[in-house]
Every structure is written in structure tokens, then in C-alpha cells.
Length: 410
Image 1 (tube, rainbow, N blue to C red):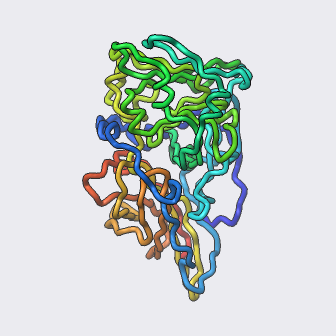
Image 2 (image 1 turned 90 degrees about the horizontal axis):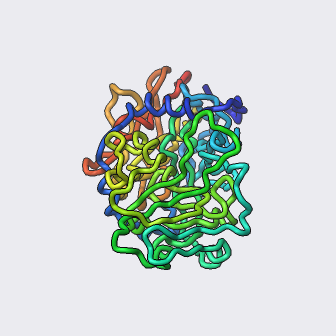
Image 3 (image 1 turned 135 degrees about the vertical axis):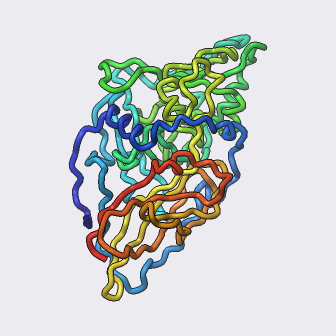
């Protein structure tokens, strides 16, 4: 179906449906292959953290854009609109409108996995407790955090439960400001037994959730936090964090799934090596590709986002009296830039190199385009692949990010 700014049907999309979609799309993906992420340091990147934009030229000389072709087999969820509340609150970003020259997601369209609690305390007196296995506990006030915050660049965030049924709308890029976690930890003296860092957030709600489990906390090694360049964010896109995005302070772990990026941070504790995994770590074990559900935090692999890519829209063009199509997409995640991204349009076809793709950094995302002339009307499944065998891309290789279209005119 060709779409010309057609309105989307609004419907509540629950986490239970997301979980079902995740299992159907990924086959659970319980694969133990994440250790490499722990040793990858953040990269020095160009243009303030954004890949160079694609060359701005008409894809088909003298052609006319007729519209876009809708993806099929995806639910009609509302996009760019907050829905429901507290643990069941969501906002799915509309990726189809992204353009290379505007790669930052506006704050009001940045995805939301859980909305703020009705019981959230007043921000003006907010404090983050630094405690656990330290010589002397201390509290950091929000005024102190705001004064020491500095720009940290553009970073992508993706929910581990991001699925095609929600148009992969739990994925966004923002310009952040905050304080490196390493600097915060330097303010206390750790005891000898301290081995890991537990980051917790406010997690009390007025209403019982239909779909979610309370437990906003994650445990890291200090090395993991430093290698990822983790920071306590106080600003998003040049403004104070909105309440639904974790105000007044949230953890951001670049390159890791959003389930690790704890909102409403109120405590950071140094803990021992044998500490048990948190309820949130256990809940997300399958979606962060753990091997089973480990009981101890030390047995969890980094919840890092591997190389991924998906189409975000298929444009229909009229060129010299003929119909042509252009696929526009994004690539993100991974630990090293990819040289060749490949595409195919059905399982019986061979992969070919994407026409226009150049990645210089894995965070945030890279835009790509590919001109396409299908041979006949029908259903086509658009799938991406990375040519380099050394690049880990478990979800991508499984077909997780495949999207389908129905072509009616060629």
C-alpha cells in the first residue's frame, strides 16, 4: 500500500504483546556471546557523535516522489504519542520520518518504556546516595549534579524489547549532558571487598502494572561503566530531563540496552563480587542474550547492542514513466564500523551491497539508502546482513529486524 501522510490507528500496545513479538521475532536469542563489549572503549567520533550525512541529491534524476509503501504485518500502534501511565506507559518513536540531516530525535518524540510514577518525589530536594562498601557514605544533591554536568554527545538508546510489532519504535537518539559515573565514584573511598556497582532508581508506583515487574536497578563492574563511558544524565537535547525520561537524573550507558539505563537514580552502592542479580537483570536476561537466567550478577554478559540495521521507509518514485523504489534505513550498534552492509528482498535472492552506506562510528546511527526495481508485484521481505564475519550481529543474523512490504506496481 502506498501511503501519503495517512493517519495511524490508535491502539494500546501492551508489554505482553511486545514480549510475544520478541519471542516470535528472535526465537529468544539465548546466546552467550557478549563478553567482547566489556573491553570496547568509547570511540573518538566526528561531527559531535553523528555519522556524516548522506550526500543530499535526488535519488532519481528528474523523478517524482509518489509516496511511501507501508510495512505489513506490524500493529497499528500510535507513534510519537505517550500512552497509558507509570509502568505501563509507552511512547513509540516514528522512525519513518527520520532524515540524515536531522538525526537527533526531538525530546517529545524520544521513546519511553516506562512513564514516571505518580509518587515520584519533588525534584528540588533530590539526592543520590553513594553507599554500600565504602568508608563513608555521602549524598549528592541535584544542584551539585547540575553544576558539574557537561555535554556528553549524541547517543542512541534502544529498548531490549524493541520489536517489529511496534515498528521498532523503542529506539531513539538524543544529545545528552551529565556527569561521568567514574567521577561520581571517585568521591567515595571503596572498601577492599567492593567489586561491583549497583545503580538503583525510584521504583514505587500508585497503580499495579498489568504487564511489568517493578525493579529499577542494574549491577555493573566499574570497568564496564568506564569502558562504555557511562554517565548520570541531567539534560536531554539541551534541556533538563523530562520526568518521563528519568528526571532529575538517569543513568546512560552508551552502547547498552535501555534496560540498563536506570531512570530516577537515587542510589549508587558498591557491592561484593558474589551479589545476586537484580529482578530487572533477571527479567531482561532473555532479551539481553544471556545464557539462561544467571542468579549472580557477575555471570551476566554486558547487555550491549550488537550491530543492527533495518529499513525505516520504502519510497515509491515515478522516473521517466517507470516505477522505481528507494529503501531508506538506519544501522546502529556494534563495536566497530562496518565496511559493507548487504541487503536482499526475499530468502531466495542473493545479498547485494547497499548502494549508499558509510559508517564511521557505531553510536548513534548511520543512514543508508538503496535503489530497488522489483521484477513483479508481490510480498517482499527486506533483510540486512553484515559481510564481515568477525562482526557479531546475533539479532540481525536471526532475521529479527526484517520488515516486509506489499508491492502492487512495478
